Image 1 (cartoon, rainbow, N blue to C red):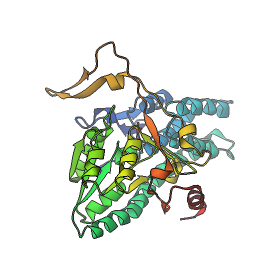
Image 2 (image 1 turned 30 degrees about the vertical axis):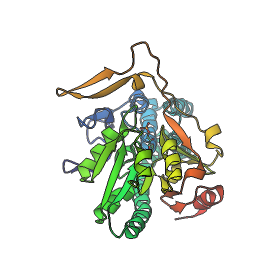
Image 3 (image 1 turned 120 degrees about the vertical axis):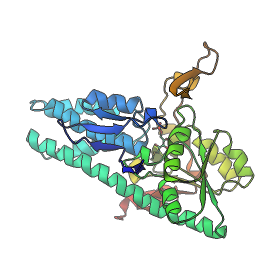
Image 4 (image 1 turned 90 degrees about the vertical axis):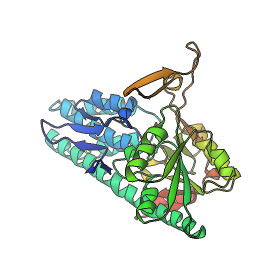
Length: 368
Ligand code: MRU
C-alpha cells in the first residue's frame, strides 16, 4: 500500500550493504513512520516478541526471513542442520498464538530437506522466504475478492446506502506483507465505489485499531470512526452495524477462531443482534491439528504494563501515562477464542466457507 505516495510492503530486502531485511517499525505508528533494519536472528526475535511487527501473516513472513538470516549466521558449520533447528526453536518461542509463525518456520525447514550443500540450502531458504512473502500478498488479494462479494450484496440490499462495517484490532496491510485480510474486502469495496464506513475498535491494550487500522484507513481515504472497545454492542443494537469482519491468529479444523482479546464479545453481540460476523484469514492460519479452540489454542499473556500504561502523542512527543494506582497489578491476555457457532463464515483465499470441519477440510483439499 502507499505511504505518502510511495508503495511499501511491511517487510522487504534492503537494497545494499550485505543481506538485511527492513521492516516498518509499527511501535511508532501512527505518529512516526520508522524503518528498522534487521540483520541478526536476535533482531528478528525481538522484532516479533516486542511487536515491531505483528499480525499473524506478517509474523510468519518475518520468521521465514529470520530463519534465512540465522542460516547465514551459521554459515559453513558442520552442524548446520542442528544449529538451524535451534534457531527455529528460538524464533517459534517469540509469540505463541499466531500459528503462521510455526507454519512458516516449518515451510523453511522442509525446503532444505533434500539439499546437502550449505550453498544450496541457503538459496532454497531465500527462495522459500521470497515465495511465502509473494504468496501472502496473492492470498490477501484473493480474500479481498471473495469478501467484496459479501459487501456488495449488503450494499444492494440497502439500495446503495452506506454499508457500516465493524472491525477489531488491525488485520490490515500492516498485519500482512501487503493489502491485509479483514481490510482487503474493505479496500476493494471502497475502490469499487461502494459507500462504506468502518467502526474501528480502539483495541486495548496496544490500541492496534486506534493506531494502525485508523492510520491505514485514513491514508486510503476510507470513512471511519474510532470507538472504545465496549461501544460495539450498543451500535449493533441500534442498527448502526451491517456486518463485522475480523482477522484471525489461529483457527481450528472445527472453525473456532482465536483473535485479539475482545473479539469474542463482539461475536456474541453480533449473534444477539443478528448481524453477520465474518473472519478473514489465509488457510495458513488454520491449524488442522486442533479441534476445540477454547481448550487447545495457546493464549499469549503479555506484560501487565501494557494494560497499566497508555502511550500517545503529547506536545509533539510520544509519552506513556499510568492509568491505575501504581500498585494495582494487571492481567494481559492477548487473545480470546470465538466459537464456530458465532461465526457466519470464514473468508479465505480459496473461497468462503462455513466454520465447520467438513467445509474446512474440503477447502484444504481444493486446488483453487
Ligand atoms: O497482537 P497482534 O497485534 O499480533 O494481534 C493481531 C491480531 O489479532 C490480528 O487481528 C490477526 O493477527 C489477524 S492479522 C491479519
